[in-house]
Image 1 (cartoon, one colour):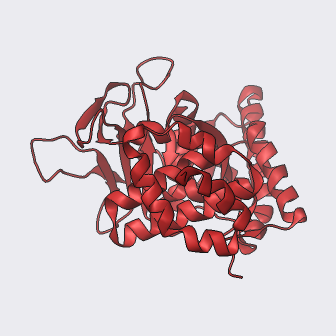
Image 2 (tube, rainbow, N blue to C red):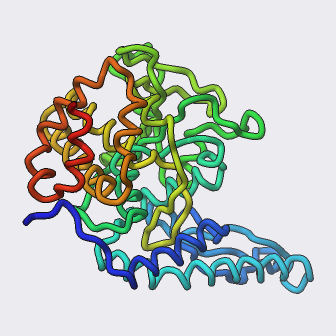
Length: 346
């Protein structure tokens, strides 16, 4: 039998649970490596504390922390930062272990980018990580190991205006750049349309897409005023964003909380978009859907049926058609999960 996934061992699941608990309790997050706290002097002989670290672009940076050295408040600020750095560094050995054992770790650029958005409060305000990075986060949270995902895309979505304290002074592009990565706007084919995608400057294919639900089957450009940005509207995205949860993004540099869709909705939405996209992307969508249907069907009785009941009636036929394409593997390798899925075909 060729299972779509394997369950992580209890010790590894427990280790993940410990790290997840630390993150949920407010463990420090840095957009880049934790680095170290050092003492520096300027040309005038002023001695101060600084943090030295590597940013998301892989460049070493130093930022001012407090001064002068010897001042009680400045020294206290530096000591607090040292404690935060030490706390993150204490996590990294466990993070590397989880990565070796099949947990999904975000690459350095992706982590720095998402950590920067977290530090600006976007996920608490309602922004949702979707796409392959969200799939990896869900695999870790569900305690399973599946085929690795590889992507240079980050997809950030919001269903409605983000609940930020006020209109932020920084734009979405500014927030991305605070990762240390030199993001630039990607021009649209229609030069009259504003950008909805942001890429690393140069030949890199690494990019971030900003997405919102479309009111119909079109793909409009929609203004996102609270982020001083524009987004691409996608049909049926509102369904995916209708039920979300917090989970922990892991990387070799650290871990941070992100908001992601709930697994059953993620799976059914993937079935739907597999019918819309086709080709290699459609195959990837079908695979990710099958993995999540297998584990949810085997561990969360009734969850798939409940999520299907929330689908717009207009797309249920398409989802059923896509489900038929993964029927054989689910029925052969995950019969209990298929029993749950088969209810959708009746």
